[in-house]
Image (tube, rainbow, N blue to C red; front, side, top):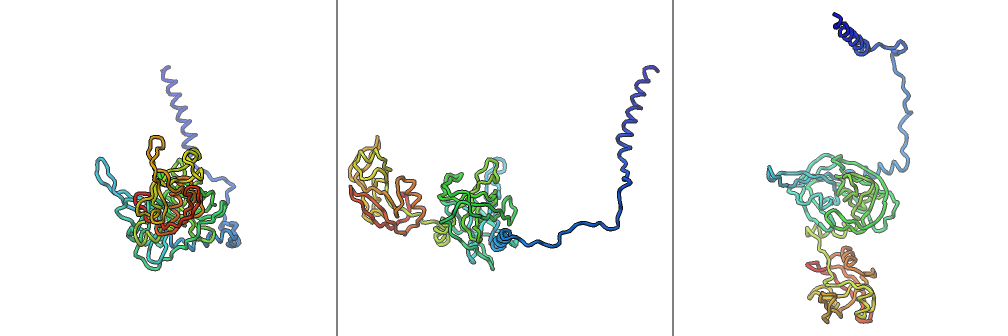
Length: 379
């Protein structure tokens, strides 16, 4: 009996603790100071306050353009080790550019797609056809058959200034019709994940997230100045650094994309080597920079315009080259000192455009007009 007493005492103590802490406190007893009025009185605003000028402009830009922004769903086939070919969906944005139903978006939004579907802001859904694509500029045009479309106004991206206000409209994470606002943070060259380079890309702190790709970047007046295309982020979502393709880049190739389905990439029709001060001194050239024409492609643009390639065999290290050709130093007044700069200049033009090429032939400086051909194998 003496041994059972502590055990019984422990049970009684535990029971009492449970009763007073759980059972007893579980009963809610209203405090005696709580009132029960017949009507609750709250303080309400006198009425809707007028929007300030900036808010009103935000609203106007959104209302003006939201009907032209679309959600794009692409279906591609991927290979699974266990199941073989399986369909996979991706989402992006785009915007209507004419009443014929043409929609501008990014190439990577519809790349390799078996099917493309477009959902308008009014929730109507249409199957789209891919009209043209340009991987080099990450641009594509698709088309839907729909009536009463309201196209966007394409602006001018030439003289954008760091600090000016911009708006992005799109479908981030599938959230249709989302507007974000920011400024132009910088204008710079950027490289996309696939290695393609965007010249004069518009950097912005307007929130751009997955699903915004292909959507419009707008100025204060609601005009399209860029196509949102990528973000710089380590977490896969907006970190305040987004990039858009300048709309002038798109306008330069739109006609080709719609009428031909591809872009007629311009070509000067030359093979060149870059010149520095050391090579210039060794070869006795008139300038210590530029591109020395090794060969003017027979029948190409440069050849037809009278530009000359090399005629003497020499060696650059262990590489045989032809010297004695014309030295290109500028195109349309823009200094050309590398093959990368030449490629950038070409990207500003289309096949059929005429450019003025400044060269040195020996010690004599000349200007030669060249009608650009269509790129094949050479720049």
